[in-house]
Image (tube, rainbow, N blue to C red; front, side, top):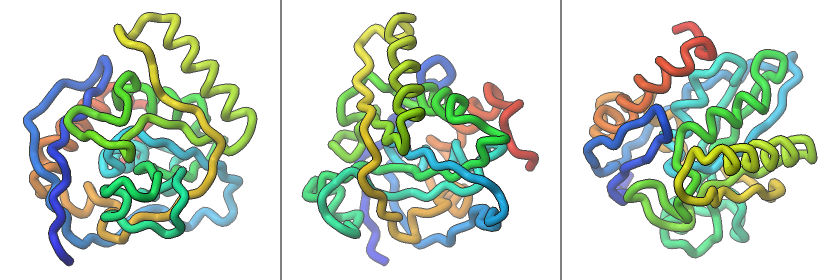
Length: 219
């Protein structure tokens, strides 16, 4: 597997996250390790884009009621895009996390709270030093109720003045989703000692776990 270097990462996390040192994200092949035995559970799906999907996946995997998180690409016009194509900005796709969850344990409202508090929704096509249309802040809704909740939450946050700049997160109807390559799946869990995981994701997770302790799965 060829090594592909991502842009340096520095994700801004409102209220609970601090800027950390920047590290390159050298990739290596990993194995997927997520909950898949939920055929008897009534599930729902949330699809969020908030920058690098390694980070998004790591946060949502730890929540009670979240059954599976898949990193992937969506919103574009090319079927089954590759990571290289998405990075070259030739497909129109965004890096996304597809979140399968049990709504009897965790609500879409709670997932929205996590979404808004784990990235900066005021920077267009950018999270920190990660620049490009694939990193835009977006909620792809799967039904009208999700649309209404997302729009309401966004409007309330805008009124609150929590950010100095306008919220530019887009709320769009779900269009498509293509799982990313296997080496992107379960990335942090499979690569805890990789430089980016140790020095960027891990400190963010530690803060995340303190703030959302009551919502986390038992280790």
